[in-house]
Structure formats: C-alpha cells, structure tokens
Image (cartoon, rainbow, N blue to C red; front, side, top):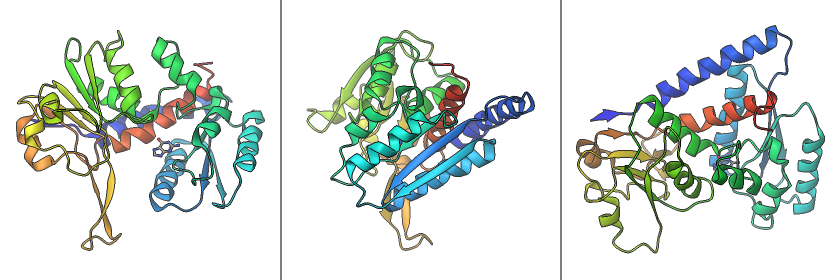
Length: 292
Ligand code: GUN
C-alpha cells in the first residue's frame, strides 16, 4: 500500500509554476493575476480563500481579494463580476462558494467571462470539457488527474466508481475519467444518495473516488482488495483537542481502508493541496491565453 503524498506533488508543481512565472517576469510578460470574491464570513470559505491568496504570493502571482457583506444583492454582485470581466489586467476570477441563499450561484457562474473562469464552473467550460475541447477544468478533479498521473497509476480499462454527483467534483470527475486521454479510458459509474447497494457497487471499483462530503463514510466493506482510493472529502468536525476547535475529516475511514488498497490519498495532505495548485495552473494558462 502506498500513501499518495498530495502535499509533495503539489509542492513539486508549485516549483514548476514559480519557475515559469519568474521567466515570464524576466521577459517582461504578463504577471498572472487572480481575483477572489468572498461574500460573507463563512469560516471554511475564509480559510480556503486565504490559502488561495497565500499561494498567489508564494508563486509571484498578483492577487486581489474582494470581500462583500452578506447583504449584497444578486444584481450588485453580478455588476462586480462584470467589472472584472472588463478588466484586462485580471486573468482569473473565482467567486467562493457557497453564496448566501438570496444569490443564485448559477447566475453568478454564468456571468463570469468563460475566459476568466479558472474554477471551470461556467457551462461553456463544462461543455467544452465534455467535448474534449480546450477548457478550464475545475481544480479538484484536475488535481486528482495529476495525482494519478504522477504516481503512474494505470487507468485504462479500469472500473472507476465516483461517489457523489456534485457539479464541482463528482460530475466533472466522471466526465474526465472516461475520456480517451492518458489518465482516462475508465469504465465509469457515478453513484449518489439514491444508489442501491452502494457498498457493493463501490466494492467493484478498481479506482474509487469518494466525493460525498460525509466524514469516514467509506469503510473497509466498500473497498476491493488492491483498489486505488481517492478521498476528496474535507469536512470540518468539532474537535476540542485541536487549537482551532475542529479537525478535517475525509470521506474515507483511513485506518480501516488503507491496509486493503494499493494507493490511497490521506486527509489532510492528499487531494486538498492539489486543488489550489490546479487553480494556480489555470490562472497561469489564462495569463498566457492558452485555452482561449
Ligand atoms: N467552494 C468549495 N470549493 C470551491 C472551489 O473550488 N471554488 C469555489 N469558487 N468555491 C468553492
């Protein structure tokens, strides 16, 4: 059994991006600029956005964090997005989710210029990805692909089961894993809360991607001997023994599952660090105008 070290892979990719940015700066090229919009003060979102801004600083990117009161109206927020769309210095825009209930996230995503949609959430990017056209691919699924690639994990012909059908992870993951690409060519099953015999379906997976957001839901009986386990879950659970008052838990019961599998991502330091790196990669692609 091998533990997939997402932190080490992320650090390696960060070095590659940092070196490229240095070369761009030396040549007088466009410094990548990421803009993050944060509405309200959801604790997890605060942490995620702070980490994104910190990564920008580490890699020599420009970043702008725009914070808005949770009472901002939908139209006001859409206007802010439109302003950023018009600003040629700004290469990438992310609007951190979740948004307050009175704001329709789909409307916001559809207002972002697809050329700046480095989260890959715009229907145009999702559609282009599905067709195999150049597109921004959402950060977490891209991070999973990079981990599989860097660990030389064979995917062709394998049965990949994805647990969870979220727009951000589950759904794009299934599209990507069936594509005719180096990491892909899987026979894919997508499962969700209405799936019958979930444990049985999961136990038939060669590659199991857990993205349902329920801490330690995937136990040993969901896992085939020798399977590859990718744990995308990242849920905050109260833990008074921690200084922060919470611990981060994955969707997989690691201690029980790890002895059964060939590869497994831990939580933390598995998929998590890859998500930010993928976002940085997309922002760099935007500054270089590679996709569009
Ligand atoms: N909320 C949870 N994950 C994400 C993400 O990848 N991007 C954005 N914008 N919001 C999120």
